[in-house]
Image 1: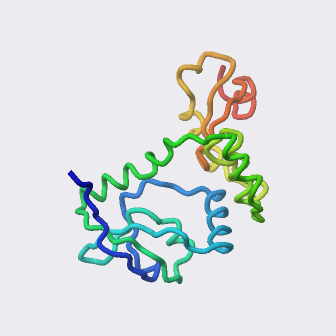
Image 2: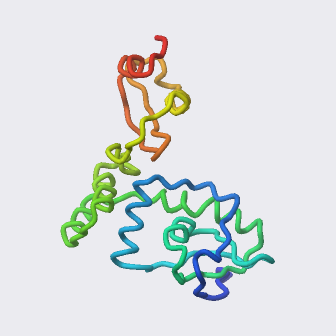
Image 3: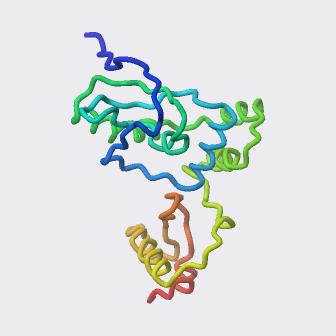
Amino acid sequence: MATKDRIKELRRVKASDLIPNTENWRKHPKTQRNALADMLEKIGYADALIARETENGLELIDGHLRAETTPEDIVPVLVLDVDANEAKQLLATMDPLSAMAQPDQDSLIRLLDAVNIESNPVNDMLEALMNGETSPMPNWGDITETPTQEDIDGRTKDLNTAFDMDTAHSDQVELICPECMHEYSINKSDLDNDFGRDS
């Protein structure tokens, strides 16, 4: 049986006219926003956003950050013939399916040797990929505001809930940055000293 083609048309619409999906679960750290903005500025749109028809207009399924980054631009949108339930299935699976692909380091090295990318945010992203990381660490140098005690308490709570329970009683713990979801290891004694946790 032939695979269904659910794409109705390619339409060009103003990005700000697209309706954000209220069930979009993807968050975009500053590092990703900067890298995308640089690529859009240097190359432009080379891929389409994805949306479906609703009574209120075109509702996004994929491309929220691109639409936010260029709200005044006319952007390419693939309009799908899917219902609300099918849209939710796509929303839930598109990114995870892409994330399952594993980089071939040798091929990636050859590709990067052959291109010249004049963008610090994009190069940071590619360097992280080369190091086997899923995303670059945030640029802490961009943080200029002094955090409030509420910010510190909230961040400490986020870090506490990010413990890998399998290593909770070992010298090393696995943490996840709540800003960019970067995973890294730290000595438990260092964490106790920095955040005042009981041993």
